[in-house]
Image (tube, rainbow, N blue to C red; front, side, top):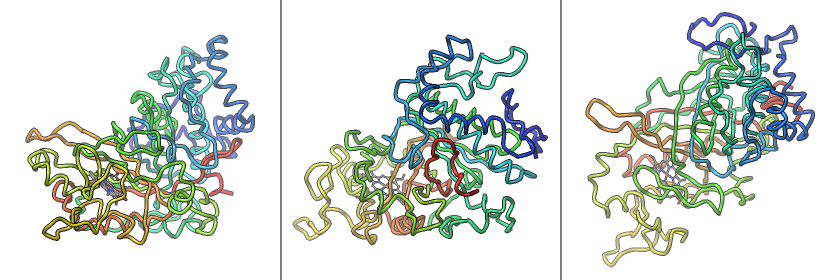
Length: 444
Ligand code: HEM
């Protein structure tokens, strides 16, 4: 199937003008260009950055301030995992379209990698970009990020279980034998209230940035590039990070008003990253070594109900003080909780069914995950209540680690105030090396 093939849904947007008509090889022109850029090494990426000036000077598309807060798309691991958590999220789940073949999938990943390597530098998706192409054709880039900085944008791409084998067992792309054994649809959990509109997906893209328009521009343009090959299945906007991934980031707050991310895995804790986040060569499969598994859970928070709960009870539900974030056993935010400590009556200071106790590694065989979620508000319902919550995102070496924690949370007193409405899991390949594209190892 070529990119120009009709979209059976009739709903996909028009493709960017020069988009990769897939050639006989199945490798698109844009994909090839992406590889060439990568092969040019950092040189080209930097060249593209420097091209912020060159591009303008030569009139080859208006290019944005590439120098400010740019994260390299290429690297041993994909950016957007240990990267200092940005303030905004646009998350998108995609399905491959009917009648696409393996070449379409490869060309899509090449095209996405090429575009991602540019927009994370603060550039348009292609050299001609938003205004440098033919006036008689729709521009390659939609243009709303012109003049905006790179804004710490990261693009993280994942592969869902259905990419390897559909629910009815069809191996569309010859990948079934390469599927990681651990990559299975998440099991049902007690209290799940999943909405099929926020579930699963063949592919996902997590776009995080410090400017919401930059994150939205990324998903909008990557969706457009996918024209004829993949289409959006569901997506989510998030604001206000609910975690930290570096020591110097302050701990933000979630919509319950509590500090969130205090006990997260941080980017300078190499041992914890190796033990709990990165898939190792011995975990297998080899194409996933250096990658991770991404779990997304859209968790609605019944905030109007929560807001009627007295402060001491809120503290007890979380197991920490709302103001300082300190464990109820005492100390400051980063004091290790003492689950043995009791009050004069012999009751534990940190309640047994509090969130932090149930989720703590000490009660879960040492299990830890890297959390990277965002707050969301999707308007309100008919009763005038906010449709709000936490778009929970976690990265872990083994999906079983998330499953273990989520099962442990089945008696969490917080469950009265939350509903899990969306869910998905994806294998996140290691980062692309310059000259290649994300997921190349899967097709080697
Ligand atoms: C709306 C849903 C949730 C809210 C509001 C929430 C909130 C919090 C808060 C306030 C903390 C304490 C501060 C911190 O260490 O970050 C915390 C810790 C934690 N949460 Fe959640 N959380 C939610 C869902 C989940 C889920 C679904 C999981 C995993 C299945 C999870 C796993 C953890 C872990 C592992 C910790 C750290 C425990 C520790 O080591 O002390 N949370 N969460």
